[in-house]
Length: 158
Image 1: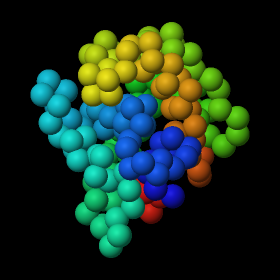
Image 2: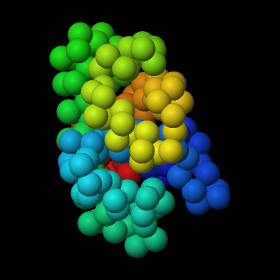
Image 3: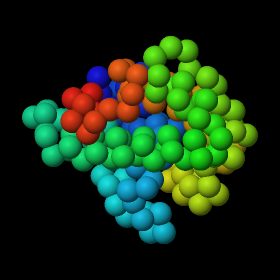
Image 4: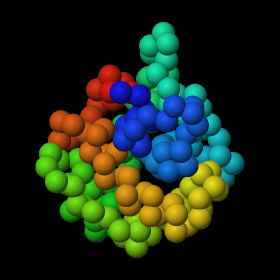
């Protein structure tokens, strides 16, 4: 399954990355970039949304490391904000707990939200609503074994 399929639950034949999919990818890679000037691995993400025709191990390695590290950071951020019940349900097998846009505004920093709105072109409300709708399913799909994957496991999934 292509990364875009994982991030959105569907494939976009237009070749364009939907703004909320970009927002989720940017959120998962957030700690691995310099949000002040937008540089880092997220600049390369759009190129990696489609499967490589040659299976490019370098691209998969970068994405695997980004997603694994980013998910670990995000899980810790949720736990630190007192929302471990929600994020732990997404990682574990079973039903995913919902998270509201208001919950997300308490978990994400203002700097993260501002960065994501700038990168996606979505308003704050649109971003938080989209993340609340999509993030539980994305984390669930990226953690099918009921735990955070290793970088190598993530490479096989993307």
